[in-house]
Length: 124
Image: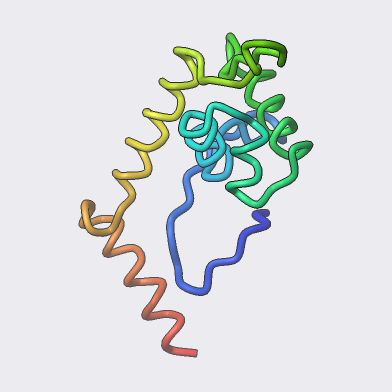
């Protein structure tokens, strides 16, 4: 069961292992924000989520991937920060590529399936 709410039918891609969502829209958005900001704290603020929640999402990914998706450096003169690892970049890029395949503007099947759901909703 998803916690998100969508007023219109839409596709939402998730990779699930056991009870955990390894990567989904929220985790992909977090990876992209870390890549843009260079900081887990700044990324979580940008996305309107708590720092603790951001770390929970990163921890879930890291537990299921063969290596870390995000590397961090502690503060000090270098000021610390975070960046995507090679694997983190690959996860984000492949997830975004799969999302694009589900875009109704790019996929006749996606558009047709969504229109079936929309017609059903109109019948009520």
